[in-house]
Length: 209
Image (cartoon, rainbow, N blue to C red; front, side, top):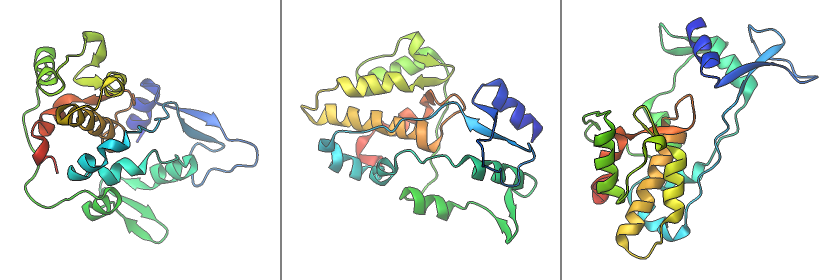
């Protein structure tokens, strides 16, 4: 637990702050202090003209969720009650765990069928080639960090697209799905990028869903 908290502070993702007057932390070992997030994620909107295409990929429901308001005291309480040895939350009513069925119900994504697998490449040259293949443009070196594409680059690309044909619509939807992956599904501590290993999985638009 201490290592996880140290990592959060080191990456400046979260910080300990004094509770507002009249607010009492729920089961928090920091006494009168609580964790607050320094990287709020703005919602990613999309053009309604791509509704049907988004539905065909099975990501439509997720796109409607938007950003969930963080309940800081609840997060603090859950951190306190998480047991890494059993991967469960130990609550007063018993043990609780998030299951694959819960994820399917919340996100509306199919969880049956074959597992999603593939190679993970990290070179900038491979990233360039994949972006050129799928988006028709490549990011500059300042538009990626480590093995991730900056979300700002994806947002800017999406906003510049003119939805004039099927190809531009497919590129638009792929950008939006990558933004969903980087913010709702697998957001990192920076809240600023998404790993590009997911991009090859969107290569064949018809098979995304």
